[in-house]
Image (tube, rainbow, N blue to C red; front, side):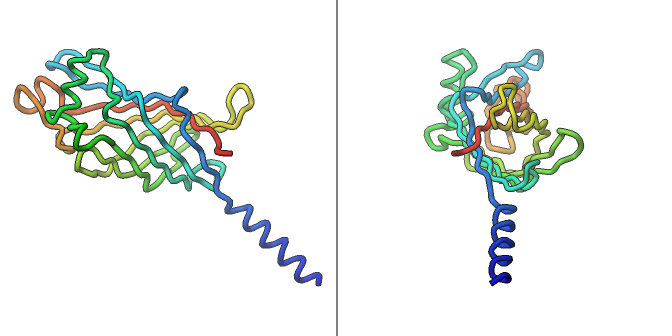
Length: 191
């Protein structure tokens, strides 16, 4: 009887040790931004207003995290309606044919302190490429004591790699080829 009892305790402890926690994006406290060079002298900044994301992890430092993220291309905003409509057209994102951008993580490595490297597959239009984000992990408790997870992540992509290749001049002279992506994300623990 004692062996059976010990077996159940061991199974309970091992099950608790591998229990996974799901985190859902808090869209009210999250932002997806981008910046691209314009005419070689300035930058145009924009954002996406509709997106969804989840994290599933068992480890408290989230180094085993599986991260999924989806962006609604039609929610693009540069604060200029005409430009936003052009960005949704086939010249850029072709939102009618490809209404979503997606990201699926392949690894989330702790580098040092709160600095991590997030690797994964980014899909824009009909192209999927490997991408790496530099991430600063803000922790899992907010200033009010609630269990949340906060992150800042940044990367640079070449839009031509994703068939987002409209340009009035060759080589990205009118609209830069390099796009900086910055995400400030807050996740809430699923109930």
